[in-house]
Amino acid sequence: AQKITQTQPGMFVQEKEAVTLDCTYDTSDQSYGLFWYKQPSSGEMIFLIYQGSYDEQNATEGRYSLNFQKARKSANLVISASQLGDSAMYFCAMREVYQTGANNLFFGTGTRLTVIP
Amino acid sequence: EADIYQTPRYLVIGTGKKITLECSQTMGHDKMYWYQQDPGMELHLIHYSYGVNSTEKGDLSSESTVSRIRTEHFPLTLESARPSHTSQYLCASSEYTLYGYTFGSGTRLTVV
Image (cartoon, rainbow over all chains, first blue to last red; front, side, top):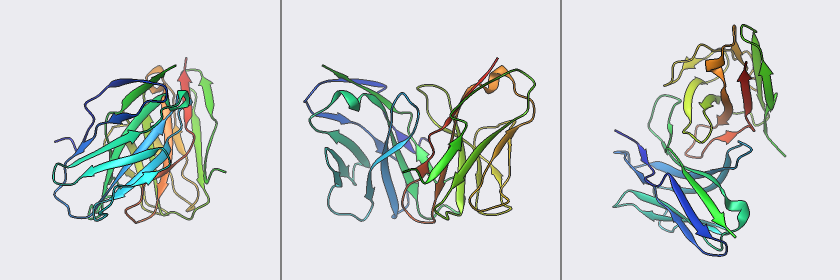
């Protein structure tokens, strides 16, 4: 089963508008971390925001916020006041604490966001 | 200022050549990873390491090999490059915590 599901292959948003990128996850662990990364066309992976499974408040980092709904196993990224520079691929990821192997960061398939002037 | 460095950034090379992609980190992280990613697609783990002298294959089968002789250095080698190896290769490192990975800038490899 997929650990991370991103159902939106592509999204468009008008400049200065807000946009929500969806992410659902699957885990039976109680301790885990949720992440969003941005990948511009240049290829590097840029860490945006982190949410721990025990955090009661939604994480925020500037224009980025993570809408964490634990019961629904959902971790959507909200970008407010979109800018042209936000056009990129966005990956949701989850890390489980009790995985014994090093491969314990699971990525979704990504959402390509395009900001329209 | 990057804490994890990958070189070269871009590489175009002929079929059959041996290549080594370099990855170094200055954070003292024990865990390091190599991912392969085709343009606009998901990341696939090809190698990882728990620490010095520890290397394991990832989920995606790869003809490449890795070594971990020093904590900070995790190079990836292709003995004989083929056009099917054309891809982006991303190196990352992490601590044993709930926090995420730190990625390098990637190497875009083209084999002609």
